[in-house]
Length: 104
Image (cartoon, rainbow, N blue to C red; front, side, top):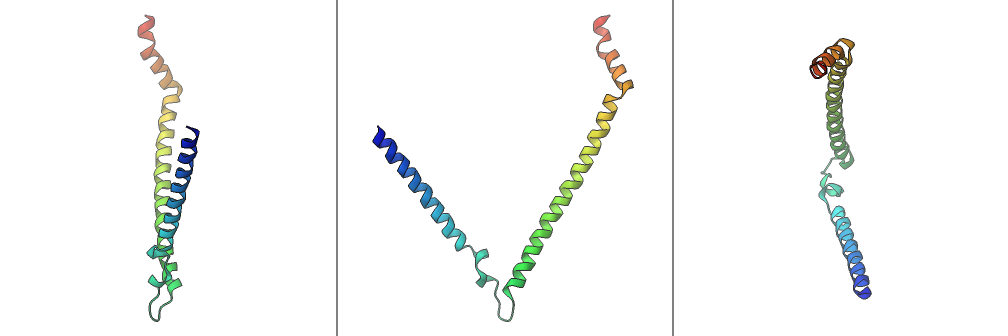
């Protein structure tokens, strides 16, 4: 039984290694990593890559600003609701509405 466990361990390690190797090989062959795709006759490859990266950065920055605005609105609404719920008049009325019927 111990031999089987040891063989199973080595097989798992081998599979993980092969998977990692294939993943690295695929990343190196990915079209976005190849400089040849960005190069044009008379053009500069790094300028096009910078433009693409700037566009990606602007898109992510826009998403972040949008999420920040939504979170701010949500926090403001929650703050107003908590203020209304915790105010002394509301708590007095709530206590009278909930507990007094059971006490009487």
